[in-house]
View 1 (cartoon, rainbow, N blue to C red):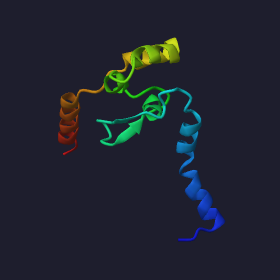
View 2 (view 1 turned 120 degrees about the horizontal axis):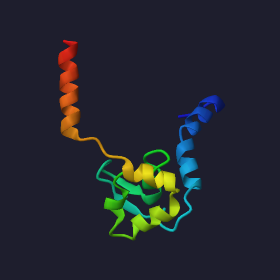
View 3 (view 1 turned 90 degrees about the vertical axis):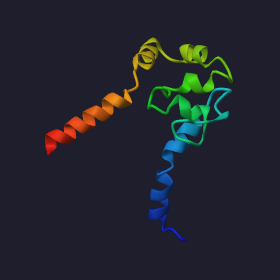
View 4 (view 1 turned 60 degrees about the vertical axis):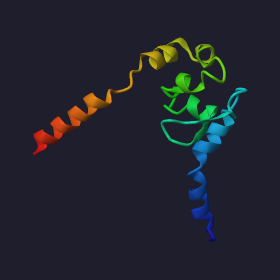
Length: 109
């Protein structure tokens, strides 16, 4: 398949996230792989550090604690505000979420 220069630029722009993520790989653990229970495939530690935007994945400590002291690593790398946002973030309860969806659906009918 051949691309015109415009199509090629659009195609390459789709990978800008990955190029930027690669540039940010600055820790000794970034290249390490682990099977992600959330996504169901292997992911690098670098991805887990930024999975939630500017914060690490909510499961990063649970997934990586066998490899190294990830909690201490995060405390050293995150600012006090980021650490508070990270530790204060509570994952949604699936049962409560399902009940809310059912109630919303009933109201719409």
